[in-house]
Amino acid sequence: MFVPAAYRQPDQSWTLDMIRSNPLALLVTADPLGRGVHATHIPVILDPAAGDPAAGNPTAGDPAEIVLLGHMNRANPHWAAVDAGEALVVFTGPHSYVSPTIYGTTPAAPTWNFTSVHVRGPVQRIGESEPTLAVVQETVRAYEAEFGTGWDMSESVDYFRKILPSVGAFRIHGRRTEAMFKLSQDQPSELRERVRESFGGDPAGRRGEVADLMCRWQRESGPAAR
Image (cartoon, rainbow, N blue to C red; front, side, top):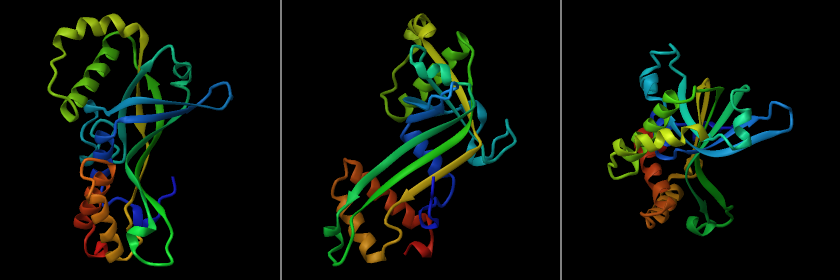
């Protein structure tokens, strides 16, 4: 992914927050028979057993590595392509169209503010039964903590075991991670503030989320952001 310098994250916490907050990712792998690529939207989480990526990875000894866990339906033809080389996982975060009317100047050009994280690395299948069950359980824990209402899965674990034969779990060791936060940084501060104020008028939608990120970027990027 091409990431201009102005759109790079202030630190890795931005990438980790993006993954946690936008976990329905696009998994892309090459077809092992050379018939193009497979792409599937799947739930993906950071592997809690790999340690905190922001503090370095004590398991792999690589501070740049992000380890991901995911699962999909084994009936999906994509499953046959898993464990066949490198994978690309794409996380898409808050985004919105920027109309030139917001700038209040002429000439101007429309654009799109957006946020995205790409993680690349080898993908490996996880064994059936209990190891796969562990991935499903960790996914539930992560999603209930971030998006749910504290649902207790304990009474459903036996049901999980019944459907495990149809679930394929995998792990990706992300050896290369690229993050892009295009938040009007290339605009003069007064125009950037107009965009932020316009988007902030929609606090419950994607535009409001973009406005929040614009505020965070200004706080954490130092004087250059102002």
